[in-house]
Length: 217
Image: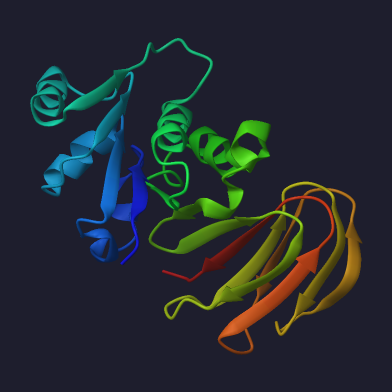
């Protein structure tokens, strides 16, 4: 199993995906704010704890400080979110590894949108192909212009192509609803598509696309 980074933000624990596939020595864990506390509850000691920790009680923060070797303390008043700080450290220390972000899509909508739009920032576009957001119902992956093939997750039913920017010549192949060199002039979610097999191909020549595989509760 290849090495990977899992960044756990402070979103509701009951919205996490199944983390059993990450429970190996090849996973490097980052706890963001309350996410560090959640990881300790799972008997996982993160490599890093990052944040202003304003969501933790004094006893909870003390527990994190006693267990975690590397802690990045941030001021509550800052220009970057705690998750952005975690991503920056991951990019610096592990420039080639895939990054999975969980605990980042539930709870506060402002936090979710901040995390969904991370790859629109030029500094994070270099990791777009390495970044995956996951929760109990959704997997979100990001794509820059080119030809792409995605594999169906066994437990997911729906497929959405989310144009985060204007997109040129969007082509969707081997999906229930197809497109051929469609111009998308503004951000839009092409929702409720479906796989017709185990893989689906798509391509575009400019813009940035998020692909969401999802399921109902």
